[in-house]
Amino acid sequence: MQLGSLQEIIDQYIHDGQSVALEGFTHLIPFAAGHEILRQKKRDLHLIRMTPDLIYDQLIGVGCARALTFSWGGNPGVGSLHRLRDAVENDWPRPLEIHEHSHAGMAAAYTAGAARLSFGLLRGYVGTDLPGVNPQVREVRCPYTDEKIATVPAINPDVTVLHAQAADRQGNILIRGIVGAQKEAALAARTLIVTVEEIVESLDAPMNAIVLPHWVVTAIAEVPTGAYPSYALGYYARDNAFYLAWDEIARDRERFTEWIDRHVFSSRDHAEFLDSLAEAA
Image (cartoon, rainbow, N blue to C red; front, side):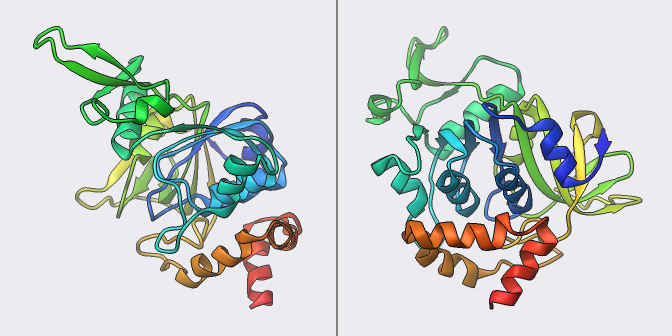
């Protein structure tokens, strides 16, 4: 397990053309890591996430992504992801190949990947129109009942990126609060990068928390407020105003590009990004 700066870790482990999952579900979304990917101008990425939201809108809008495997995608509580829609509908800033699933389909695919199986099973797709738009959805016959069961190919990202509350000095990771597919995405990955609020001597994990053991973790960067504008339970709240403001920023290509240039590309790190937002307020 490597402990280092976010800049060093992203440079070392994320490369053009890879499949990358930045997982988070409402909570603990790895915004700081996503912005560092933007600063380093990674390209041709196959992005993966159960619920792509603002950070994926930014990655897609800048042209980092060639493909997206996802379930629901949007600005939570607000509406559409305008940069995602522009890429799908108008090929701007570049064409985007999409592989659409339901949440259950993504969970089955991640779980299969974590178990090192070649595909996942679920009932939900049988009899729906989704196989017509996603040829990766197929079916098998159960060897015990002879019924049809839908299948999805396993997801094994080249790199999974998470944000978590804490890591101890051995490299064990504590995640508490709302979780989506973080654990499965972590175990399915070939490389696991985690940003954390803090490094601690002992995790003191409460009941029902997730602890990812150090032997599945590749690298850790300590990045306080690294999930902002989403939230980290026990550390800071969600900035709902940011999500509302993003709807207008992302609607217009020029305004989006100006925002990225000012707040992401002109900031050396996450702390400077936050300072730039405060100065603009």
